Every structure is written in structure tokens, then in C-alpha cells.
Length: 225
Image (cartoon, rainbow, N blue to C red):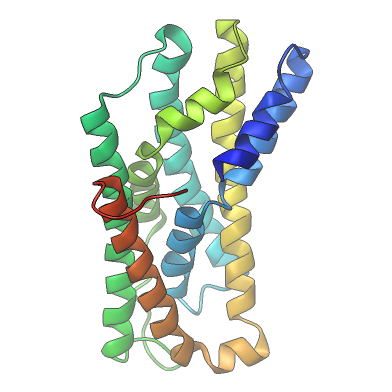
């Protein structure tokens, strides 16, 4: 999705501070549509079919806040000194993102296999603190690339910091919206009736994507995002 990000970020070239802020917000709102984010959201929310849109929104927002925290923490050095994580740490962070998705997928598939999903079963919902922690790990991956896209055309440090804060904050908003939408879909009649049958499909797809993402970060398979 970096092609679209490049296009959005280029709108801030030579623009006023207000436009820079709008570009940062637009980048944040688009961020949740990355494949790894959508996969993580689906695996996270699918584990609690009783959460509904409201519960899914809270879970997604907590995850998004964790993601935003990492983006801001790792983005500040980029703003102030153009300092990035060493390549080895960037690789480790991207690999960790893939492993997080794998763990979420395996947890979902394990609960499905044990018959813990579906009506009449007690739901061990993931807490918002856990979701926040997952978001922190997820946000570490790709932080340098995102920072470059957002800050390449902003030369004033103060403006860049504000733009980074807006970008990070609206990634949390976008992830809350994505999880709310997914939670809403799961509660619709036809989908809700087939929820248990859909879980292994969601879990298997998430597992395959997570494995590919982790291996791609290690350059073991073609890696194009």
C-alpha cells in the first residue's frame, strides 16, 4: 500500500501547515487497510463472536493505541535526527509482526477445535490491555518506512512532530473503525448463523498470511507490500 501512501504524502510538498495536518490524518485513516492490519484485526475480533460492534471497537481501539504508541516512539528520532532502527532490528520487528499474526491465528483455531466458540460456550475474551500489547509489537514493524513517507517533505521539526502525532492518533481511529466493521459483519444474520463454520477459514487464511509475512521479513520468500 506504500504507492498510495506516497501519493497522499506528496500532497504535503510545499503546502501550508493545515494541509500537512490533513495529509497526516489521511495517512492515519488509510493505515488500517494494510493487509497485515486487516488480517490481525480479523483474527483478533473473530475470537470473540459475542463482542459485537461495540466490543470489537474497544478491542480494535486498544490495539490501535498500542500501534500508535510504537509509531510515535520510533518516529520521533526520524523527525529530530533522521535516525532509524538498525536494519537487523527492523527485520526483527517485521518478523515479530508476522509471528503475532501467527499466534492470533493459532489461538483462534485452537479455540475452534476445542469447541469453545459458538453460542452456549463461555468466552475468554482478550482484554484491552492484551490488545494494546499486541498493537505495540505490531506498530514496531515498518515504522521507518512510514516515517519517511510522512516526514520526507516536512522540514520544520515542530510541524513534523505534530504531523507524526496526528498520524499515530488517527491510525488508532482507523483500526477501531476496521474492527467495528468486522464485528458488525459477524453479528449479521447469515454470517452469525455460520460463524463457527467461518472461523477455520479465517484462522487458516490468517495463519498462512502470518507465516508468509514472517518469512518475507527474513527474505526467505518474495515479500511485496
